[in-house]
Image: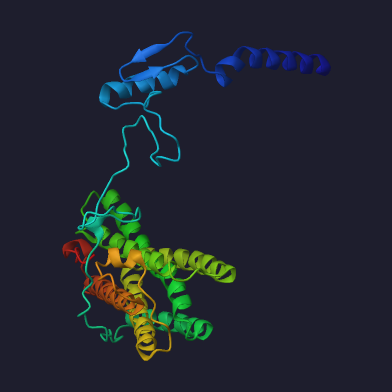
Length: 329
């Protein structure tokens, strides 16, 4: 009896697969050709694709490349798309082509190198002392590992420094959505900080290519730090911002040491990477020393922003009550 039931179920399953197989795993095609606006839909085009093409042709006046319009792959790098999204073409102030995809001309700026690089927030409250202690505990093993290898240190530093702004901005973003309220510009300010730190990294990897063990270290440190900072920000945003403020203070100190060694001739002052010249609007004859100087100024700005954010919350206010200092970058 059981055997008969098993055979019956097997036959029923086979019949079901046979009947539904074509519907589930194949798509009906046109047997003829259809012309929909600027898109010539040839034989073999799926029905779903044809509908998308038809709808899109009604919405956008785009032109799909025909046989006469096709160019050799070596002549163009543009990706053709029926979505109507064309790669932007930008030029620099002197009329030359803009070659960077990671940032646009309007995102370039001049760093404020007159900013005070010696400011320090004296830890007074328990919140401050905990944050300061955490940063000092992280500082010594890092200094011991890198010693005077400034570029190696900078690469690792920037992979970590770009995390707090992204985590803080992300959590403020979701908080704003949950509470149906504005953020006072702090989401944008923190994401700008994260992007700026990432651009520091893009600059340094143009000078130095990390070794495999350094990449492994970055992988491990970033994984631990991201999750730890995420939990810290959830538990106490004022503590998280204070930690970042002290981290940025240490970054300023590290770049000051870097700059001193360049000025003393301990390290070779090589020409500035092209990406740095365009991003910080530096003169064409700039050197690594000029790059380190503007990066140090950025770190000092991030220091002030995060200490300010922590001060707001330590005084019992929310970030949204005080406009974020947007516009530096």
